[in-house]
Image (cartoon, rainbow, N blue to C red; front, side, top):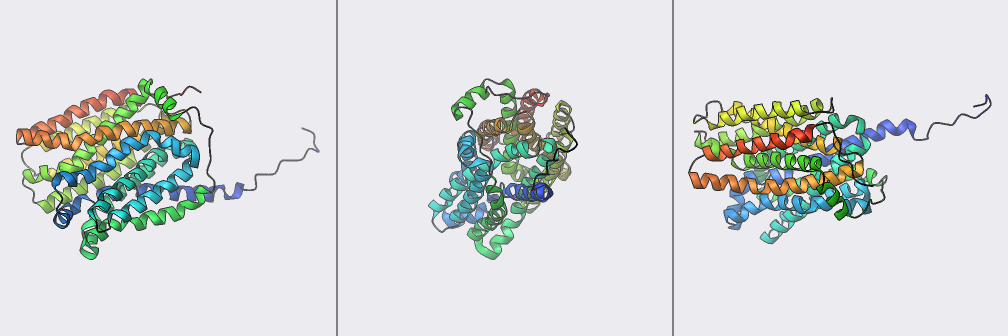
Length: 405
């Protein structure tokens, strides 16, 4: 380069990159906060909904299962949306669908209750799939901390909804309590709109079926997907049955409800710690073993007939399940070679994962009904734990899923 050659100026937007990145982080946190309240806010209000609508327990169970089925069906096809709207636009659509679905299901007719639940389920499915892909694209060097941040925000959203639903129902009625979370979705969408203006479209690498076929041939992709599914199954079993189990150990309904809230709060800590720890190295097999041992201890404690140490066991179990959830989300980012592969892997893993998770609460309840106790159902969670280790160890090795170009 000659002494007189001009020096290229810095990009005009260089001074604003840090503020823009900060706005993006805030937007990601707000998106994540919206991915659980619509689900966690239903359980505490089941008695009110049953009384007001006359729905059977089976029909009420569908309100929990319907979003999981939407997650399973929609997740694999999320790349169809991102190819048209980009990740930013698809996340904006997700927030709009969550807000709309939450508002619709609070309308008077029972049909709206189910229709709104289906709509918000599709919106949450989009958000579930796309956040790991966005982290892979924009925070590849900070995957651990960012996954820790947004998975903790998801746990916080669930905890807030579980704790606030009954007070909101006392003030607004149960329909108002269910519909109140539309405000949070509207706030997140308002903050997210600037991101939609900078959407990045990538050329498709074949059809969605091509991507599913490629991923279906990858043992690593299946390990990640099954780990996601088994940790989700355990989480939703605990969410559905922990209070009933603890009441059989001598706790009253209020105490059992607080124990569930305690487990959810501990899950926030787990989902924050595990990705931070895991992001420091390429291999996470040690973390798989640590989480497995802690979960075995917690399940062993719950097998005891006394509820004297219930707070210890539910705190430990909540921490482990939160940690496994955060780790599974991190796998979606770090086991993919590109942001596009991350979106496709996330879609496959969450589709498989939530279809697996959907059978958990019903199967656990059926085992309880068949045996008249909790020993066999809890031992079934031990079997799930062993399977989780078996698929988690291959998923934790330092490798990446690479799609054919």
